[in-house]
Amino acid sequence: MIKALIGLLRPKQWTKNLVVFAPLIFAQKFGDSALVLKTLAAFASFCLLSGGVYAFNDVLDLEKDKRHPEKKHRPLPSGRLSVPAAVLASLVATLAGLALAVSLNRETGVVALSYTALTAAYSIALKKFVVLDVLVLSVGFLLRAVAGACAIRVEVSPWLMMCTILLALFLALGKRRHELVLLAEDAGDHRASLSEYSAGLLDQMISIVASLTVTAYFLYTMSKGMKDRLGRIGAPLGPIDPQYLMGLTIPFVLYGIFRYLYLIHRKEMGGSPEKVLFLDMPLLIAVVLWIATAMGILCWAR
Image (tube, rainbow, N blue to C red):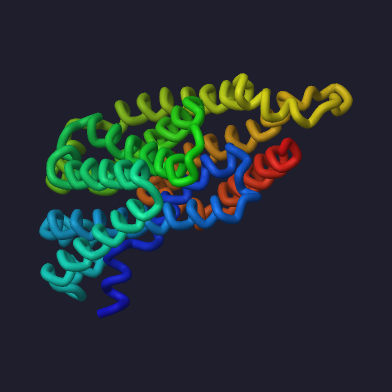
């Protein structure tokens, strides 16, 4: 029973909530233990909120999930958990997440409530509308980043928000493509919006968003705010101006995007981004190297 309840909240997908740490890292506040604890609390809050939404969504999609080749193994459609237990777990997790967010400050509470309302609306109706479904998912990621900024009361860069929403949109489109290919002619029966997509259309959208994501990140590394931070390093490092050091992280972003595209098109692995990250070692190494390089540069500039 306990194992089924934990599985219902999908802890493997909580890695998506790590985006709440982005403001802490890029605002160079990771040396402040009090702010780190607040960010951890915000992360825990969104883990509870997303878990509650996943449970709520599983209740609504119970009959469809029973016919899905992968989702039928989840606790609810497999029969390991009853609907009343799932509803109660969803309610408890959501209320606990909101309470934790409010305990940080009012702004974080408002963002958490907005996230809950948006994702609930997505589960009930918005996921049925083509294009709008993936846009809502990407806004959910953006709200996580904003919550991280509100929790420690720092201003979040517009460039960071743009990169977050574009990357989330890229992942969401990849997931839709995987569902379309996996379910084939039954795709529309499982999710109404899938009947409006085609593999060709999604490929075009993915290509556009991938290009925008790389461009936005490139511009972010060269933005005035980033150059002002890195300018504190001082003297030039040979031919390298310290203001542009974040440009060293661009190759990791490029490789990560290209590797994910390869996994989507050649390995058909886009259905679960959190699984892809941990199952594909080259992609995981690229992400780890990006984090290490970015944090090393930002630490140096503090």
